[in-house]
Length: 86
Image 1 (cartoon, helix red, strand yellow):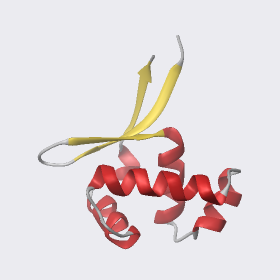
Image 2 (cartoon, one colour):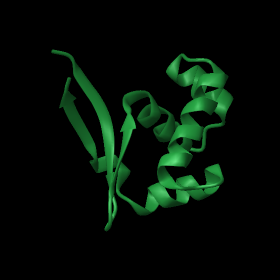
Image 3 (tube, helix red, strand yellow):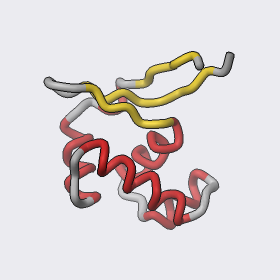
C-alpha cells in the first residue's frame, strides 16, 4: 500500500484536495515564485507547473493565479496536510 500525500483545503462549504505536486507548486506560488522559479525549485518542467496551476485554478473555481492565491491565503493552507493510503 502506497501513502499518497496531498493537501486538503477546508472551506465552509466544501473540501478541496491537491496532489502532493500541486501542493508543492502552491507553496512556491505563495512565496511569490514564477512558474520558472517553481519548476526549478521542485525539479519539474515549466509546462508541468502550468498544468498543476490550471488544475488548482479549476478545483478552486478561479480564473487567474492571483485569484487562486488570494483564495488559498484566506484558507489556512499551511495546516492542511493529509495522508491517504492507496
